[in-house]
Image (cartoon, rainbow, N blue to C red; front, side):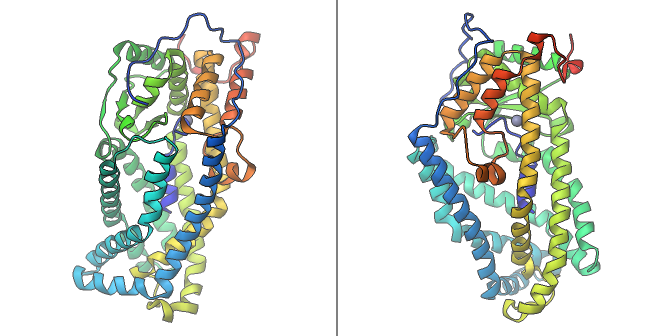
Length: 423
Ligand SMILES: [Zn+2]
């Protein structure tokens, strides 16, 4: 369920440098010259292989941890504590969720610290200080607790009031929640972690706004964020809905790409914006939540019937059942992840097409991808299992090949999105 929420925020340019201003593009480059896909370096291959092993370990740890909380009776104990502290039904849920989040975060802390901090520094991908890592982690914990306090009572109320239809009503209630989360995330959540400012380079900003105008985006907002304090990788993304819709550039990507490369990346982001991808992901997340909750509805009762005595609760409307709900939904979500990621890769591919059509700078698109690959230690040709379960974007090798090969305007062939461009 939380994985599905996370998807709604994952419309990034690519996988993921200190800030300075963007270098102008050399006027001598020919945009028709193909770009070779650089082979993965030995460090990139080590990063790829160890990353896959860690991903498997993460899945196992999460499942074992949730099962242990249930079978040891620890979840029921947390609920009893929460009843004592919270007193009434609503605050029991709020306190239970806070205790659950804190306990599981402490247990997984060594692994999280290794993955997010130690490993990123080992591979030279991070600039983050330990203090920033701690502040970000604690802020993230607080945000999770607040989100839980705001929303978790809904399924538990519905579980009590409507034992047969709670999954349907909860999924319906999740839709406005996801929309509001998308609306407030860029203005209330993201600034808790980094500083968002208008673009420093006004010449570049004017070029981006001119491109946005051609893409049919009116009153577009572009922000620069100081991600160089956290990472050396490069990224840009679109976020928000309605009044909070914006394109955000990491300062690392501004520093590392030249003008044309950056404008291609902006064209890609504008593609997400114009083609309504944020809304498509909201719809996808809602559908995933519906499917996962239905799976939970079909299985949780039988599991509690079989092991309820050991769990210390017999009613799934008891908030102590939360680890079971998360366990069941995360196992089923592993099964539907390949379909969700395939759709995500399709949207990213269309955003690449949009970026190429509006800029027509094939060579610069290719060299932008090469820089993303080098800076993130990415493997341009990952294996099929990685693609199925982990790749929200087409592999960079495929993206470079596509940017070499896709140029209908040179042959006078029709473009897919040209009718959307202002002349
Ligand atoms: Zn994208």
